[in-house]
Image (cartoon, rainbow, N blue to C red; front, side, top):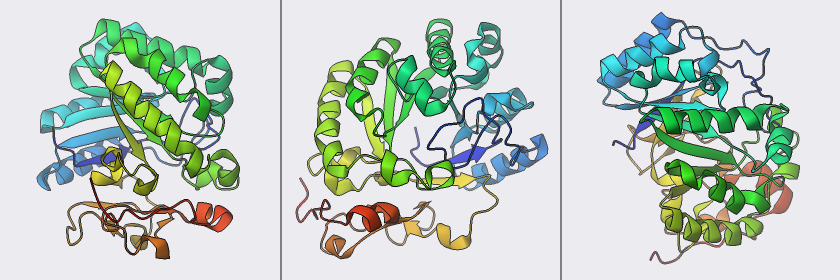
Length: 310
């Protein structure tokens, strides 16, 4: 499977109102609602460029009125189709049956190990039950691969191993842990909800060890690679990503290339920067650095440049 993919954002409407949502998605957000024609044009253009994997995203993409038709189009064109969902309509067995033939993988956004933690983060008292029902529906009724996303915050960092254990019976193929973006709903509270990097290192090292036991591929996104010196290859900075569907992006947002001089594989900066301590790091041409908001609040003393790679 090609690691180069693009995110197709088809709606900003969402059943949740997560505290960290960089796009301010909510039940009332109608900011983006791609038409079927718009989605088709984007899919065709990206496939011609050589991109073979698409991530259908929101908001909650299953709320889009043409969701099934967009999936079908993507499959007909030839994409490996991934849906990123918080459970959405997948809680209904009939819905799962109706779209399963057009989906290769679903990545569910699970942010807590129980009602208390997950629902507090999503601002939806029913969200934990919904997403666990959806995961079970897909696992028991389809052959679709399942992945999990967790945005790491001060609310759940001490429960990540419990989340890993919770998802382990469902044949999870990959588990992505994401640093909150200092944008949208998260912007004003970013430094209060994001854990210190020095707290993340031992937790992440432990998760990597435990994930091997469960046979789950684990990766980390939005974190400087140097906080995992022995496991830097678990960083998503090594893979390529770009986003289609965000109409308010500026050209200078798309500035980080990986590897250097490879314009076909650029990634979003989203406010991550490198500091002086990164100049001698062996990963400076791959790692996007640390969020500027974090550096301004806490400094860069936690960033230790890697002078040798193992």
